[in-house]
Structure formats: structure tokens, C-alpha cells
Image 1 (cartoon, rainbow, N blue to C red):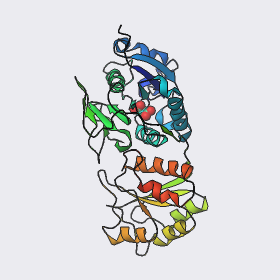
Image 2 (image 1 turned 180 degrees about the vertical axis):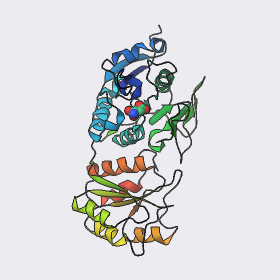
Image 3 (image 1 turned 120 degrees about the vertical axis):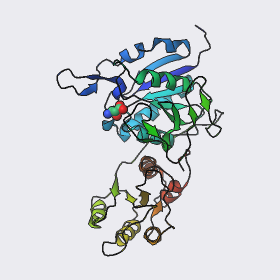
Image 4 (image 1 turned 135 degrees about the horizontal axis):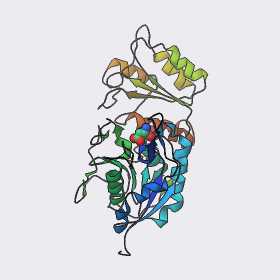
Length: 333
Ligand code: ASP
């Protein structure tokens, strides 16, 4: 085996890729022995020197900001020892973890590649083997950002969204073109961030005390009042179209004003599958803007939620939140 194979560290954080079927209930559960996973694709060692690190073994619906911090800290601590990192986790919340890590580990000079699978590795027809192999190969490429490798796509982590329970199109990147395509060879597009020497900015903390509220016809403004009463540190409103909110008999504008005046940032996101928030398109968005709301612009809801949590934990003063939310930290805007 060649000695100059790139060194890759595979961080395992659970998901179907490490699950087995419970023979009684038929339900998929995290496997007890995840070291099995690495044995499923021994031939990868021909191309990379792969080390394995178990971080957690959970269904990703149990993923949390505490585990994001643990993942980011593990990568930070091992940063100089490896040429790239792969994180295997469940696809359900992968877009959140990838977005969170893109803020926690800014100015990357090497890739952090997320992957997972819909079918367990030890089942026939599993997508896990392919995804894991391509994730490891992508981690050797000239990329320096957090990305997601699934199906035949390489996507920017904080631009991606879970889209489908189909092994060929699990994820999509609605507002940003793919970073590359998997195949022989792997093709990278020119807009993907390239490896170069730069100092890693490590800021692994998140404040999860936020409220994310979907606006719907008939939305009671009291729902926002409730968020304020439970002392949420920030509020995200998923509004209609490009960011419009009710302004007539059920107007939520006074509640937005109240939140902003009491120092609680309000972010307007949108409910569109492929859409950009624009608070100057209609009166419903403009009034929210005048009341002090901040636009999520082209960010996905996942990127917006994790960024607000990151901003709340890292802003020196509350007034900095707006600037952080409106600044492109890691290609999310
Ligand atoms: N429920 C699983 C999870 O997100 C699905 C997957 O692994 O893709 O953990």
C-alpha cells in the first residue's frame, strides 16, 4: 500500500448507516457494535489511511447543539493530524449539523464531509457503502468547506436540505449549485472553496433557547407573546411567500416590535421550497422589516436556525446579532 495516502478521520455520529433492524418490531435502531461499519468497506484503505472515531450512535432525531459542539471540538482537536474529515450521521438532521459545523469551524483549510444512508450498511442494496466510499474520496479532494456527499452530489453543507426518502436524491441544494459531482473522476465546480493555508476560527458554542414559528392563516399573535414569556433569546418566523406576515386583524407587527424592543431578535424566513426572503417585496414583509425584523435572505431554514443559535452564543452584544445574521460566515448567504 502506498505510504502517501491521505489521512482521513471518520467521525461516527449514528444514523441508519449504523443501524440494524430489530427482529421483533421490525424498527431500525442504532447498532451496538459500530466498529463493524469500517469492516464493510476495507478496500477504501487502498486510497486513504482511515481512522475511526465514535462520537455518538443515535438516530439523528436525537442530535443536539451539545453534540454539534462535541463534533466541532473533536475535529478542532485532531485538525492538524488529518488531511480531511468525514462525519457519518443520519440524514434527517444532517443539514442542521452541517450548517452548525460550518459556523463553528470557519476558515477551513480542509474538507469536513458529511454522509449517511437510507438503508443500513449490512442490508442488500445499501446506499451506505457508496456514500461512505465517496465521502472518504471527497475528503481527499481540493475542497476546504463543510459539504454533504449523498447520491451522486457534493453539496455545500449550509445550503443543503433533506428532500426525499430516495437513495438517488436524498438531498437538494435549492438556492446554490452543487459543489461537484461524484463519479470517476470526481468533478468539482469552480465555486467550491479550495484548500489554502489559513487559520481556523473555532467557535463551537450554540444557544438553543430560540423559538421557530411557522406562520399560517389564522396564526394567533399570542403565539409570539408566548415565546417572549418563556424568555426565548431569539425568534424565527417562517412567513409566507418572500417573507410576508399578517398585518390586518391578526397583525403580528406589534408583537415583532415588542420582541425587538425587548432585545429579542426576530428573523423572518420563508416557507418556500426554493425561495429567498425579501422584506421589501410586499407590505407584509416591509412592515415586519420596519418593526425591526431581520431577513434570512437566501438561507435555508436549517442554516438560519443554526446561525441564530451560533450568533446568540457568540455575539459580544445583542446589537451584533443583526450584523452576524446579515454577514456571510461560511457561504450560507
Ligand atoms: N432516521 C435516520 C436518522 O436520521 C434516517 C437516516 O439515517 O438517514 O438518523
